[in-house]
Image 1: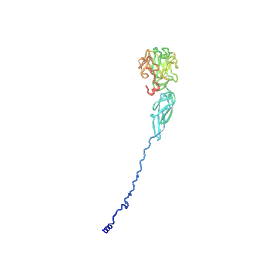
Image 2 (image 1 turned 135 degrees about the vertical axis):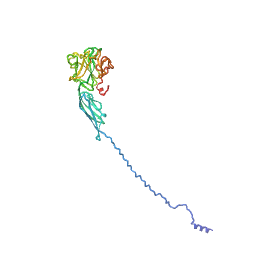
Image 3 (image 1 turned 30 degrees about the horizontal axis):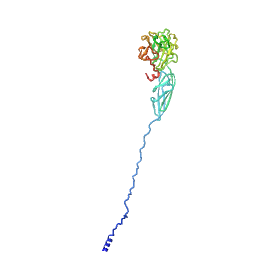
Image 4 (image 1 turned 90 degrees about the horizontal axis):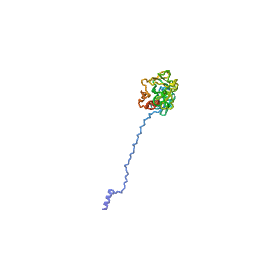
Length: 328
């Protein structure tokens, strides 16, 4: 029986598992990563700076020698680094070394004011350009002046010339206003009365008598005027180069024609007040300078019987700066 079993075992090879795996692992991962990033950034910044820079400016005047009756116009041109130019007149600042000679109130225009020489300087974007201007005085001509107020009846209450004495001759006055927007030279200008028997001028303005825009001159028959003062006004008596000073202005209470003549004899302005004569008050324009003649007491805003050196309401004349700036 044992022999049979042994033979059977031999026949099947004696199948016995010892628990070990001797077969090698043949399944290995041989894949390699061949996916590489070959993309490159081809975007480039194509923006370019197109701004141009100012490399200089030039101030150009239409005239460098003018009278106070003229205006100086100017332009300012900027040059850029690409060679282009542009008119920048409205954007620049223009200053004067002597604003009492010439000044700028409106872009593009320089206003002559008095005799002399000044330098205009334009400034823009860090650059300056200069030009010199010489100004001479322009003589008064037709239409430049107006008789704004006239006191013929100097027996009024008060003391118009302020000297402490009431006098029917010395307290007479003419208030002469500048009616143009320019400075005028009154040298040699005369005041003539139609009824003055000798025919001599009642007054001759001396050399260097200047009346600026927005100002007035008051001419009295006589007296001490040292107590009078005011803005934008000059006070004179007929003692200035007048051969007939003893008779003052000699204005007729009943009216006459008063003329203001230029040095060459031409008429600057005249007033026939025969039908306008006023008693116990002055005759004045209302509104001042531009209006019609009325009894001072009836003038708009009137503060009394007369107002030498001011408007009828007592306010001061505007002066040249306000005139050129367009201030009422």
